[in-house]
Length: 235
Image (cartoon, rainbow, N blue to C red; front, side, top):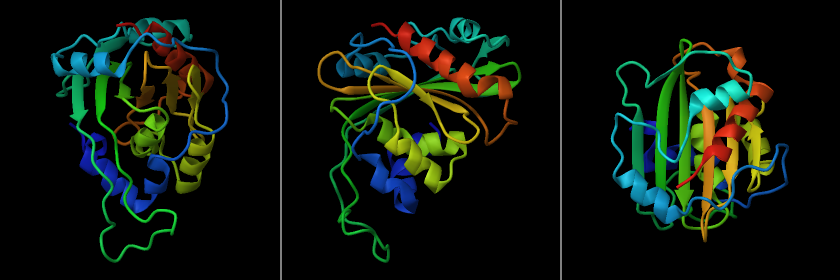
């Protein structure tokens, strides 16, 4: 598992400046057509994640080559970057609110590090052309905060500054909508209505930390590909 995806990593990033966004209120509608809704439940995502093999295939009907083709992105796709598993999972049991470490200056509105709900996180990795690409799916059993819980990893993948993170938090997609991040527009984020109580988000991003940005996998083409992935989701 990569450090930015672990619960500890998310909380450290939160302490560094994004904690106030992790469980904030989702705001504003966004651009994008309606995606698949109500096909997956949190319980199903979690139970599936528990039994996934690291060699793949990516679960829930996700077909990246088909999504890219539908979005007009003509690149060869192979599962898993070199020396990495094609599928990774992380199951979180949740964590209660806790005091801030001593010495940190925090706003009065955040008297403690926010609690996090239980979660199921699935990552599918690919190489598109020569670019490492990943699909992340996060499901939680509560309504509302799922995109905010992904903000630290979205920030890293999208190379976002603090102001851009705040902008995206304020304009994040509502259920059935898909957006790309500000700036280089290198992360697509789809919010998918869960079956029953819960919240699900899917992201499509390239590895901009260890590889050069691939322009074909940005902007409106990336948004369309992310939207297509969300529409593919099924139990």
